[in-house]
Length: 372
Image (cartoon, rainbow, N blue to C red; front, side, top):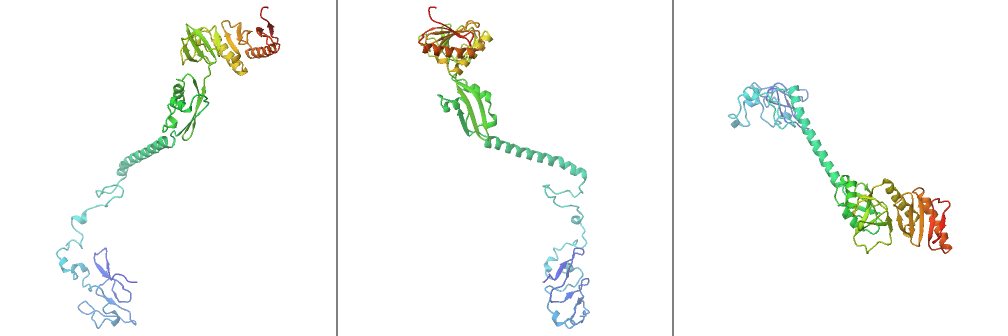
């Protein structure tokens, strides 16, 4: 392995020869001294400062790749390039002058600027910490905002909309009424707003909205079923079993005869399409809802032609085959309707057409034929 025959001395600023494999060596401290160890012999230096050719062993001759240094500081006499003498700084060896007196620690990595040469103190470090913390906080906030927006408007965005519970109304029309569109953020959807939009159609009733993350929305609706009608102030109103007005008309010639006609309702407000009818008596409202609910449960709504609720102590129903049903008060409506159905079936089996069925006591119904 070979090494450069001249090595720079960082203290003196000079170069000195070192070992080269297979050759002799210069002295480590005195550049004019040359030693060898061929068979234990030593070479002697010539009086002029350089060893003579005769004093150097044969195997050491012509082994130097640079001129032999003649002074302690080889840069004092640049034999290799005399033209550099004029460019040489006279302050090179003694390190004097403005350049050598300048105190600097060089470029500070990450700061973007050079220091002023003054030693860094704890106070200067503390002054930089708030700035770094603010930049770190702003970077973290920007990153969090970017992630939030990507998730909010990307991952959790509406892509699929399902409608359940509809029968006659197409799902596309229900979705149009709801105002849902692809790409809307799932978490921003409001059930109350969607309910309000859907129920602008009096034939629809909103039940609930379900969010199936990450991108599916399910709308459950119920189509309102008209079950009764009434006449008030010369206008015919068609309602469902919850008194929701589904339609109205002033044409008294087109009666909805397939529905139950209701008499005796004392109306306070809400007699308008798309609104719920409000009665003056809360008890009458409860009786209305309970009666039509139980008729739907027992499947007898279609056989009832008229319901008179003018007196809550004496409810009267009229069937389409001519029977009048006296129910008494509003207690045990379910049992009374069931008793009426059983009695009517038996009367029809016995070939009775018309008469009064009294189910005030549902356990013991009483039948009175017409004319008695």
